[in-house]
Image (cartoon, rainbow, N blue to C red; front, top):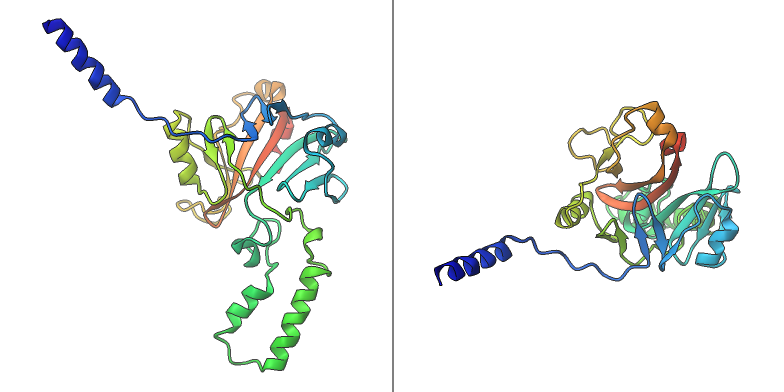
Length: 262
């Protein structure tokens, strides 16, 4: 009887100590270092864009001849520097219509601000008369819609990816910060993501060694030897954080040196 009581108490204690796993929502994308799937089908990295069309449907537009954008889905793929095979996938949680996009803060659209943002700034400025401001707003609006800074001239999809992603067993979605993602990863017993010097310039991109509000984050820590690098054949998963929030997920199909593309 005494042994039974001890066994029951031990079982209760172990149950109390077992960490509670977070609920993982149903996702279309599953992403890991060794497998990338969409709706349970392996994505055809290393093959031409025609194979990707079989998964996502026809792309919306082409940017600079080698980037294929699906505006409604919120993604793009790009070709390798060596041939026409696809070696990168970007999944966007921000675009030009997002708050940071309107403020001109996005990585690939710095300085491209919206009329709404300019009007808000002008509220506290009394230097301009109404006619001047009206002309300025019309000029910026024209530039942003049909001119040089029209959305079609940028890599950002017209819509962001609106669902959650399953990245190695942890949910990632729009609006998250690196700290939010690391909480999810810790709950799933996964290594946390850390700052990664993607362009190999040995600098923190936002000039800070503490906040790291801008830059790439990943679990990748570098290859140990040149031989290891040459044999590498897996997926580098990078989280681009901009102004403290995840802008997009960048996935590079790595074969040796291509891991260091930026």
